[in-house]
Length: 233
Image (cartoon, rainbow, N blue to C red):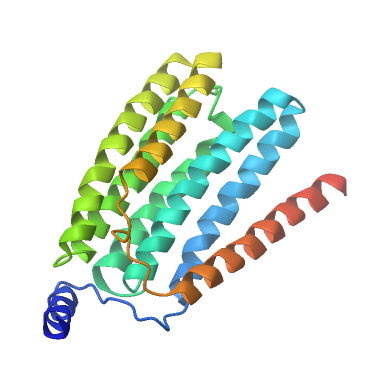
């Protein structure tokens, strides 16, 4: 069993993916990755501050849920394989570009502005790119792990169903968009939860997962506090 595990690790290293160990900690690259999410969170905070309504807060919370889902996915990926090396790093750079587009379009996530491309549709397409890159990179990182690769394949099903709802909502707009975005999140998250088998999502380092969440909260609060201070000055 030990020899088989070591062979799987050697295969993944040759493919440009280095598995993490139990004492793995957050890498500087992951903190750099978080910066685009901090920008996105400040965009959401600014949107809710401008709306001054319960409906605007609801829309902002849905945006935060979309951001949180993708960030959590890449955090689990970084827990499984080193995020600052090889194929995983390349995939996360692509995801950063996609998430930057998401952040830029948040002010037009629910109402398209004049000129240019359709804001809600651009946001959804960029978001789906981030999700697809995550599952693709995760599948490569899971080479040699049949249980994890099976779980990743299953995860495409609720993600695809949620994607159809998100695209439909972006095209229809209004309250329909808000409703479909809510249903899309429920389908995606509940689908992953209900189809997950115990132990198939590998947690290599509890310390890494704890540290990543703590650092992200600090960065997010700092960014939002800066925005709030600027609004009051």
